[in-house]
Image 1 (cartoon, rainbow, N blue to C red):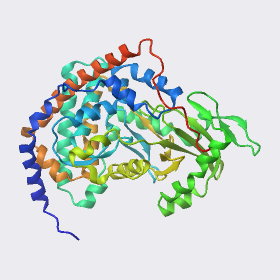
Image 2 (image 1 turned 90 degrees about the vertical axis):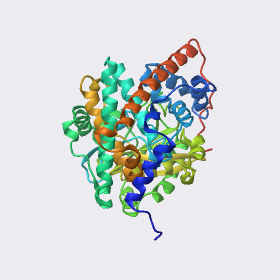
Image 3 (image 1 turned 180 degrees about the horizontal axis):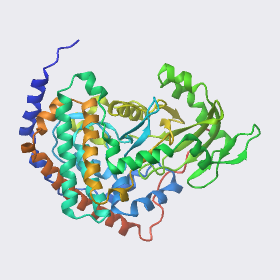
Image 4 (image 1 turned 120 degrees about the horizontal axis):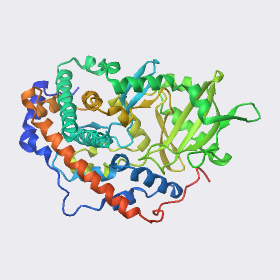
Length: 455
């Protein structure tokens, strides 16, 4: 094995990065003079999406500044790339915001709450995740009528909890770090409510919700017809999706391939999901295992490149460039999460790359309304800890801790992050207003028509 420098030396290297970018300089945000219009950036991100669904994505983004923020990762990626950065590279979620954490079932059946959306994941400066999460906290607080001071305090909590846990993880043996769990989940009110919702999100509940009593010749239930949000696929496209399972199966661990083999596909549908992903190709496959009371729903989700991809070579992170976008997402998820979906994998259909994962297996997220009052800071604390754990698992926590510092007297970064979040939330609101103005009376933005799954 190659010799590695000691943890103390890596900590010192992190401290040295303060000369490259002082911690208080993270406060700075001002739109550069040559900034591309956010309306243009968003329109470009629609290329390759299904034309008939582009209007729906715009509608979801127009609903509020936070709705805009959810669908505007390409705008923030471009903006972050214009800023000086630490050069401390970690696997990042890429779209870290308060709605992209959630509950789900671990392989052993227990409920977990963790970062749970990795469409934009990549290797990049670790602070990009913190800046996006901090901005989302301010926007969520504003949407709930919180005072500016409360939003600012919540970001301070996010940053200080991140720093403290990162420092604690840096002192742990490697395997203890890998096994580390956040144990206070049920004491965080918004998370406790999400876990209760997740408890009710069973495969049988999903079966009742998205299939109906109209059955095939063998007596199996079939997907409902609820266009444009849910539509059964024509036979030719369904066959193409199912044909991709041979490649998907090979992306799983051997013992998980065996479990997948126990299920038989019943029906295939197209589904609209999320905000950022609206317009991408997203298929659902309904399978049965040990009888009709053992349903499995797999989501086959198109993955274009990360919104950060055009900027990574500028920041020394290109060495981990993905060869398959579904694999990029799956591997980023496995790197950052404590435990991941046992059926997480990837495949290709008609030259497009897809992630495969379970749909709604005890999944639930936090609603913005649950972040009113003290819930915002309470939740921000947990967000900081989960990001710290994810970055420690996938990057060099000694570099991060050396740069940030750990004690309460080392809160320069906390204050700077809060100032940035306020400034960028203002920018997001201005960008949202620009989009609202541009869409008044606008026709559907140009986009590709849906390509069939196979010819």
